[in-house]
Image 1: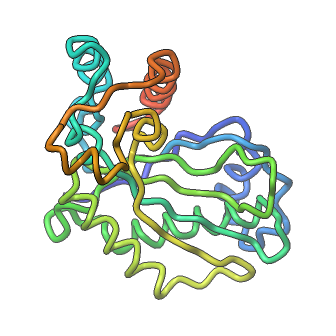
Image 2: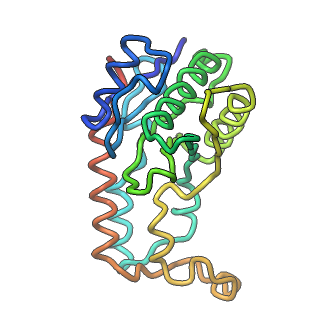
Image 3: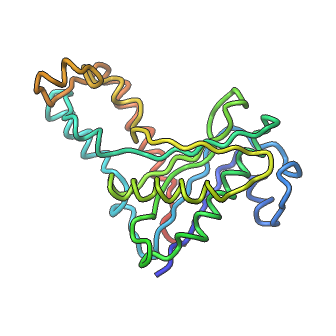
Length: 226
């Protein structure tokens, strides 16, 4: 069964959508794109959002039940692959174009879900940076760390072969809810970890809840079937 690459284009990227629909090959012909996100899914037909998306409600319930403490393994199980594209001329349209071309190349190679059972993903592409020299990013999530490692290796393989004029790519692994570890007491403290304590206090419950609200906002924009 084949996977389908589905874009839920954000309003900020309407010019990019029109250009891709028209099969424009020169990113310099694309009108400037604004800051924002376009949401992407790459799964076989019949995949349900509940089968894929991290359970934010469960994370909230766990925090509340434990007096706003979280076990360490909760955060280590939910990571992401980040692909950054930077344009030689700092043009955000060119950087975003490069990421769309990467997604198309990835889809061409890994669409067969029987041959590549672990390379499906959901994510978002774009960014909200004011500094254009930071480029644009693609954030990719999967169903767990084992699957995400396969996605990471697949991304690496595609980027080795992909050439987009005027664009350079980088990739790295990061925590999926990247701001939360920074508000967990002792999360990166070796002495705290060596103490054997598995629970970490949430130092800013209000900010924690804001992050969960953002995650729920994102989840509403993922499309799993057309």
